[in-house]
Structure formats: structure tokens, C-alpha cells
Length: 207
Image (tube, rainbow, N blue to C red; front, top):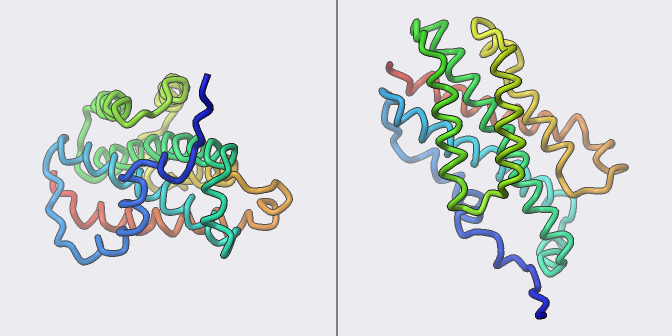
């Protein structure tokens, strides 16, 4: 049986496109979000952007000039991939709940069950991008539990992205003693990225 070495090539092309070209997106004119299909695309792409940019930026900051060398380490690459999907899974939940809570309060959008339809559709689509099935199933269960208890009238204004910020802290493949030192910086970095997304959403939404 052959042993296959996991390297930087095993990260998808999309991972690198999201990470290295994210800054250029600020200069691209953005269309209004006027229907559920456009909202679905917004939730998927922005969740991926936040989760991947914050994870890779944190790894690069902590590892410094040794960053690229770690791509030849099988265990490290496995941990990066696992972290990427787990952080993304929580980011998807947070942004789905935020957008539909905002729509309910500010646009009188009452069909909250559409949030579940969109979320599940995004997860189903991610199977083509090799999102691990065990993470998908765990995420569906977690979403349902949160869905049953969420206060839709308050969620969007009540620290809506804390869970995904904590997920970066939890899943980033960094030594625990270093993460403890970095906790405040890590959490703030995610929240700041979400602040960008919140502003963009409010500027673009036109239901």
C-alpha cells in the first residue's frame, strides 16, 4: 500500500484564491442582495472568506518565516484541513442566523425556515468540495440545536459572531500555551473581519 504525502498542493485552489486575493475584492463593485439565491451566495462566500483568511493569517503570523516549511508536514496539513472545515461550519451558522435575524427585524421577513433550507443546501453543495461528511453531519445537528433556541429578534445585535471567533481559537493547529497568550488577539481578529461583512451586508441588502 502506497503512502501519499499531504502537502500544500492538497489545499484546494479556492483556498489560496480566497486567501491571497481577498484584499482585491474591496475594489470590485458589489451588487445588491435582492433574493434568497443571492443571499445564499453571500452567506457561503463570506463565511469561507472569514474562516480561511483568519485561519491562514493566524498561522502565518505565529510561524513567521517557517510558515511555508510546514506545508511538507503531513500531520500539520491534516490539522489545517480539519481546522478549516470546522471553523467554516460555525461561520456558516453565525452568518445564516445573523442575516435572517436582521431581515426579520429590519425587513419584516417572517419565513425563518428559509434559513434552514439555505444552510442545508450550502452544506450539500460543499460535498463537492470534499467537506468531510462527519463534519457536515455534526454541523447539521449543531445548527438544529441553535435554530430551536435562537431569539430571532435579538440575535443580529447580540454578539452574533462569537461562536465562530471561538472556533478559530479552538481549532487552529497552534500549541495550546501559545493560543492562550493569543486568545484576545485571535478573537478580536475574527470579530473585526465580521464587522466588514456586517457593513457590506447592510449596504447591499435590498429585500
